[in-house]
Structures are given as structure tokens and as C-alpha cells.
Picture 1 (cartoon, rainbow, N blue to C red):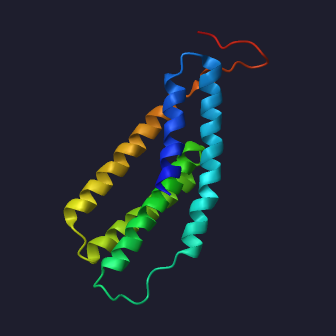
Picture 2: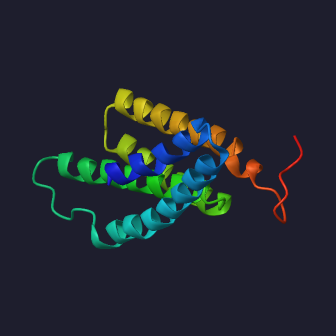
Length: 148
């Protein structure tokens, strides 16, 4: 799951740094396609992976499940963010935040929760910046290049 998330973030940064506008556009479009593929994979995980009902090892098993669920939810949120569906992105970021609150209730270490929140906010800001610098600006209408 984390490999998918990493792949969906790597292509846009490559697109933003490409010297060739055509390559930048191609990379940007490929990243969007990857994001659209990531969403159903993550939803499948959410549908098929259920919260543990019997906890033998304190709350460790539940917390491990919640940690993974958090990252799956943020992966979906970032994928929607990268496909310009801000409403769905916010929905999944909110769901992920609810999972962190559940971890807090379970006495999950506050330092880990803070680190997780900070990492997510950084990734979110980085992705927002990358998307704002879209190489699609190189694409003109009707075959004419955009004005400088």
C-alpha cells in the first residue's frame, strides 16, 4: 500500500522538474492515471480488512489496524486531491483524522500521533504545491502555444 502511495507522489515531482514540456505533461497525466488506479485498490482494502473484534494483545492489534487504515485513508485523500476532487479529498482527510482521534482514545503515544499528523500535512502541502505548478500550462488550445 505504501509503495502505491509513493508512486502516486513521485511522478508529479518528476513532472514539475522536467526540462521538456511534453515530458512534463506526459508525467503529470500518468500521475493522474495512477491516482485513479490507487483509489479502488485502497477502497478494496477498506472493504476487505475489518477492525479486529477480539483483542488478545491489549490494544496493539487494534492500533496496528488503525494505523494502516489511517494511511489508506490519507492515500485515497491524496489521490482525490491529485485528480481535482477536493470534496472527496476532504472527506477522506476527515475520516483519517477521526482514526487519529480513535488512536488517541486508545492511549496511542501522543508523540507518534503528532509526528503522523505533521507528516501528512507536509505531504499534503507538497502535493498542493506540485499541483499548483501544473505542466498543463504548456498545453495551448487548438494547437497554439499559450501566451508567455
